[in-house]
Image (tube, rainbow, N blue to C red):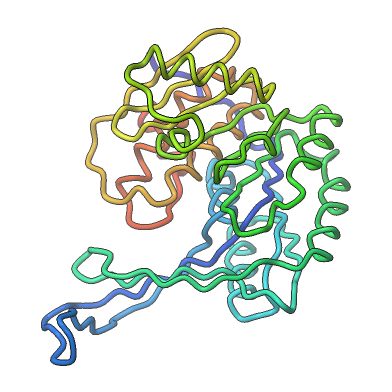
Length: 311
């Protein structure tokens, strides 16, 4: 049964986390290099897109929400490019500059619509800059409905435990896209959204859905989470909460590129929750939105219009 998509125009989302610049070099492959057994790509065009938490923010904006992005970048050309791209998307940005930091850049070389190579440029931000970001975060809490903490393990969320405490004390829902094995730092969040492999890294393997449910609810109780959403690729996504377990099957459509699908999921959840939808219905919309973006190349967004078309 189709769901009515709520009015998202007054929903205010604060996105905090690790931002990056995704660069794409597109070209043709017509020969193998005489120097080594590798393809030679003749670059014909280049493209830049916001990645990481910046892509989460862009997804929120595409769904009609009012978005603020808080992060750390380097005092470099890539940081300036990110600020420009976010401004073009109508997103308010507070990008703290760290002169010792190189803005994270992921360069992908694409030939014949296939990713041939990815090159990463990154280092960790300075502690003093992060401390300033924490004060900025606290000042911005009152003006938002939902907080998204997008952890890509790049050092931008060193103070995430304090951020969760501050946001919950202010009565805000906090959605976290986690990274790594230390989930204790996410204790007290409203919702975590690990993917299947990330979740397996923390709780170990499971033999069936019953064991998955047992492990998920044990972790949810340990961390005092309201809910836990595990995205399971071709198996869809499953929500675990005190109200029970809800599953959304994967949509039968051609998968072109899964990069950034997790960003779309958490962004859609936040916008729908902030606009008044209950969590199970918000998950259904997130599942539909993810089905749209995996049919696109690279980090992409699902617009409100596209979402309405599949409802």
